[in-house]
Every structure is written in C-alpha cells, then in structure tokens.
Length: 202
Image (cartoon, rainbow, N blue to C red):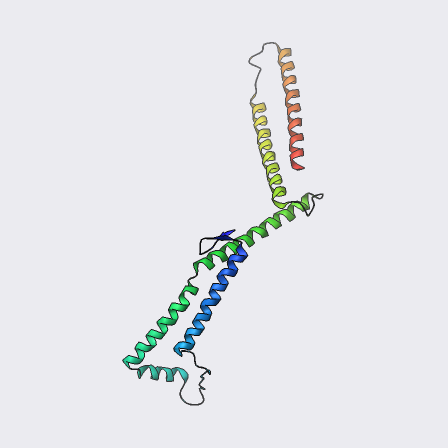
C-alpha cells in the first residue's frame, strides 16, 4: 500500500494508474488549450532551405518586426499554456510512486537471487517454499554459526593461557587434573561442533 496525492492508501499499481489518468487529463487539457489559443496550426508549416530564406533566418527577421501588442499577446498565450503543462512536469506524486516501483523491483530481484543461491546449497528445498521464511532461517543459522565459532576461539585462548604447575607440588595430581581438563574441553567442543553442524543444515 502507498499514499496518494489525495492522502489515501491504495495498491501501488492502482495509485500509478490514477496518477497516469491525471497526467493524461492534463495533456489533453494542454492540447485543447493549444487549439483554443491557435498556437498549433491545423496544417504543419514547413519551409525548404532551397526555396526562399532559411527557416532560422526567416524566424529571426519576423521577431525583429514584432510590435508591442504582438509580443504581449504571445506572452499571454505562452504563459497560459505553461500553467496547464507545468503541473504535469513537476508531478511529485508520480516521481515518488515511480521511485517506490523501482525500489520494489530491486528488492524483488535481490530476494530472488539470494533464494536461488540458497536452493543451490540446500538441494531438498522446494521452489514453493516461502522465500522470506527460508532466508530468515538461513540468516539465523549463519548467526548461530558465527557465535559458536567465536566461542571456539575463546576456548582456544583460555586453554593456551591455563597454567596449573605453580599451584600443585604433586606432579601426579597435576597430570590427572590436566587430563581431566582436556577430556572436558574435548567433550565441550564435540557438543559445540554438533550444534554448528545442525545449524548449517537449517
């Protein structure tokens, strides 16, 4: 849903149709005004360079021969025509709707690309799957993997900085404690590896 120039909410395509109808109406009004002001001749007037003076030169000579009243009349007609056309040229509502349309196109293209890439990695994913849900699950799985990888790094730092030799005079006790710590660390890592593996299968 998008907002329109008359402060209502409607479907984007319906809003665009409404604005185009308004633009068409303004252009038709401009054509009608041209006919009323006799600015557009019924038959197209053309000049040939090979017959008589060049069109630009002839037009320039005509401009030099205009009187005050003729210039004033031309000014009024041109200003009247501009007043009819200008709202169409500065149609902020149309520009906004077209920008929304372009943004939605880019977002849909990106979503389809990401979903296609995900289906290449997850072979059993159906093409009828809900795109947003599939991408969100994959994103959450990736986030969990990153957090677990960070925990692996923290465990490695903790293991490398552990030194118990200064706290036990009995070497056998130190060896037993070290062996117990290693077993616990290995079990913990195996558990985390299983979590990482399951997260990757999301």
